[in-house]
Each structure stands twice: as C-alpha cells, then as structure tokens.
Length: 360
Ligand SMILES: [Zn+2]
Ligand SMILES: [Zn+2]
Figure 1 (cartoon, protein in one colour):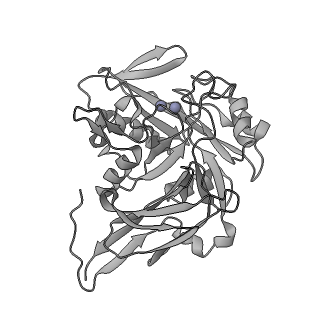
Figure 2 (cartoon, rainbow, N blue to C red):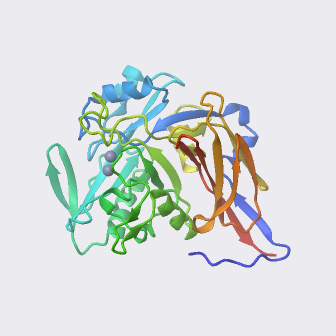
C-alpha cells in the first residue's frame, strides 16, 4: 500500500485527468459504446463472427472486439460487410488462455486488443476441442505468466485486458502486482458464474470483488483502467442452454473519442477517457484540478441513483443521491473514482483521477 503522506502546508497538487484535453475540444468529442470481450465459433462461441458483429451493431454498439481463444478474427471482411463510418467498427482481438498445471488455478485469461498476430500463452500448448491454450509449468508463478502474456500484447502495440480474476477463484491480487500501467482490468464480466463480487469460502480464503482487485492495484500506485465487458458466447438462444448467462449486452464501455476509428478509440482507451457500465449512461463526466462532475442520463429509466466517490483502499470518500453530483478534490486522495448504482442494481464506473502529491 502507498504510505499516507502528510498534508503539507503549501502542498502542490498535480493531477492527471482522463479526458482532460476534452475541455478545449468538447464539441469535437463523442461517446462510443463498445464491447472488448466476445466469442464466436472461432473458439467456443455458438455463432459465426458476422452474426456476433451484427448482434452488437443492431443493439446500439459502435465498436466490438471479437476475442476468441487463441484465434484472431480478421476484422477486415467484417468491416466490409457491417462497418459504417461513425456507425460501427470491428477491431482486432483475441483472448490469451493461460492454464496452470495446478488444477485449482486453471485460468489466467488476458485479452489482447489491437494486435495483428495471434498470441500463444507461455508454456506447453494444450488444445481442448476447438480451443488451444497453454499450460504454464508449475514452477512459473502466475504473476510471471501474466507479465509475459501482457508483454506479448504490448510488443505488438496492443492493449492488454486482464479478464475475470475471480473465475474459478484462479487469481489473487498479488498475482497482478507487477502488471504494467495502462493495463485494463475486467471489473465486471457479463457471465453469471464469474464471481464478480468475490467472497470467502468459510475457511479463511477471502477474495475481493473484481472491483476490489482494482482498488488494491490503484492503492499500490498502479494506473489501471476498469472495464465492463460481456464475455458473450451465446447468440442463438441466450440464457437457454446456460441460465447463468453468456449472453451479449450485459456490460460495456463508453469511450469518448474524436471519431470512430481504430486510432481514436485506442488513444481514448489508453488515456482512460471512458467509463464502464452495466446499464447506466452518463450525460456528462468532467474532471479538472478542482473537481469531478458527473451528470447521469436519467430521462428514460425513472430510476434513482447513488454516486460514491472512492479513493485509497476502496474507501468511500463521498456519497450522494440524485442525477448529478460534484466531488471537490482535496489533494490527499492518491486517486478518486466514481461508482454510480441505480435503484435496479445497474452500475457505472468512471476511471480514476490520479492526484499526485508533492511539496514545495
Ligand atoms: Zn476467459
Ligand atoms: Zn472470454
């Protein structure tokens, strides 16, 4: 954990803000809805890539990464079929499927976004059905396999997303201590058996929520961005064969960018100019050196909203009800992020604002 530094008289505040540049170009920026985690029959999904892409296009999304296990679906033909300027864009991705020799830790999955060649995880290749992954040697720490697989993504100029840390209770926070800044963390996965909220086994094994993983990493000084994504597999009859749900449309990100292009979406994600959602839309989100302002689009739902501003170690710094709220930055927080929850259980998460402290 970061040391709590004393508040010094004359302290200088320096802060980095997602989308801080937006103030001068506000009118030129737009929100685009996208999903960074979806499967097709190129691995264990139930539908062809064009069916998957069409589902998202027809349900209010502007971009999609199809992220099959150890398979890179070429977005070119799909963009020729379904892409449209400022309407819909397919982007390249895969899920890197790391298995472990220890069957209790079978899963360390990392999405590779914006890559151009398929990546195989470290270790001995193992194929099950259509899916191929690799088993890391028992002597290799999970933290090392994460680092190696993320490094392979970055070597291709891609963005890495650590998926569902509580799936099969495979990952512990310390396994992620060494992941590089700029990595995405899936704080909400749309499937119903992923253990997003964490829990204990009654015998002392307590796991934080996926969001709790985020706070642990942020409190250690990591600059990690939180995403919500579907991990969708079922498009034919969503929820029928698997009631716990690998259906699409569960969780997504809203990215603020100048245009719907690979470069603009990539740079907005890189600078954290986006928020995650399971159903709440923000009318506006602004941050400057003094405050964070959130306005919730509440016109359609009739729901009520609670906004919590969260800082070091997951501490709730401020809580308020209603459609709009402002947080005044004190300068001692290390980071401040917001979580909005509505009266139906839908949520949205803004990216952390980092407050770097120093003294004269
Ligand atoms: Zn996975
Ligand atoms: Zn997946």
